[in-house]
Structures are given as structure tokens and as C-alpha cells.
Image (cartoon, rainbow, N blue to C red; front, side, top):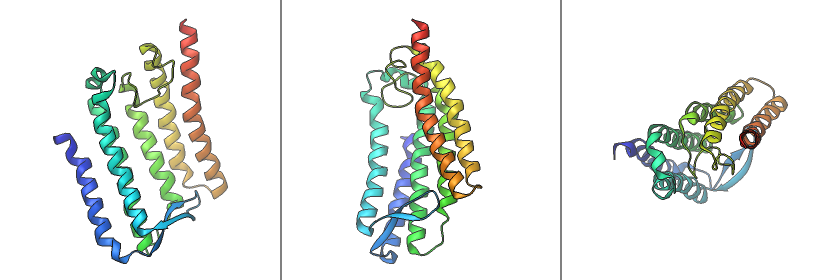
Length: 210
């Protein structure tokens, strides 16, 4: 039960924050911003509250429940601490984003153009740091047909992916200090590399192994 205290506390505090802020929110509030910090997505405050809280609660329940139904659930005991840290980091990021969104809607000037890449960069670095410890499973990590078919390919792919995610996250953080066009180029490049490179690498490793 102790492992659930932190994420449940963040969810509880966020529900309280929404309840306190709700009367002060405009009927339509921004919920999405581009890389330059310009709002480009809006929703009614009621929809914004239920959708953002709903995503957070569903994600928490899913990540808490999935290890119990994974066909490779016995592997989770080998990386339970890393799994918990990753879960808490994701819930923590959603918590911070919600608080910033509420602050912005109330009238505070929140520089999402700088904060957005910073937050994403931090979560990428956290994922990269703990990725090598993740054992083969069907729900978290680099799950390609080739990593799921070979523990050796899984292990080597995650070692390589950890470096890609870590330095990609660092690049995102540094991108907060560059102009809008370059910031956008860095963000999309990092995301593309972190998605595509591990997938290709796992395929190459598997075929080299055959």
C-alpha cells in the first residue's frame, strides 16, 4: 500500500486544486499549447476538469493493474522499483501540467513555450535512466516483435534506448533556450529518433542473432 501513497496524494491534491480554482476559471480555457507557448486548443472548464483528471486516474489505475494481467508478470519483481519510479514520474508530470494549466487559466503568465520542452525533457531523461532495468513485458518499454521474441535483444535494445532517451531529453531541455523554429526542429527530431531508432536497432540485433 505504501507504494501507492505518492501517486494517490498527487491525484487527491489535484482534485482539490480543481475544486478550489473552478469558480475562478473562465468558461472556455486553454488546454493545449504549441512549441512557442501559444494556446491552440480550448475546452469548457467542466470538460477540461473531467478529461484531465480522468486521464490521470485511468493512467494510474491502468499502470497499477497491468502487471497483474501481463503474461510475463513474474518479470515485474525484478524491476518493481523502476516501474514505481516511472509511474510516479508520469503522474508527477501530469500533476505539474494541470497546476500550470489552472494557473494560466486564472490569469498567471505561464511560459509554456519554455516549460513544455523542459517537462518533456525531464521525463525522457527519467525514462532513459531506468529503461535498462526494465525486464521483458507486454506493457512498458520498447515492445517490438523482436524484443518480445528474445530476452537478449530486449536487454541490448533497452541499453541503447536508455542513452537515446537520456540525451534526447537533455537536448529538449537545452532547446528551451533557442528560438521558436529551432526549438520545434529539435523537439520533433528527438521524438522521431527516440521512436524510430530503437525499433530499427531491435530488428538489426534480432537478425544479426539468427
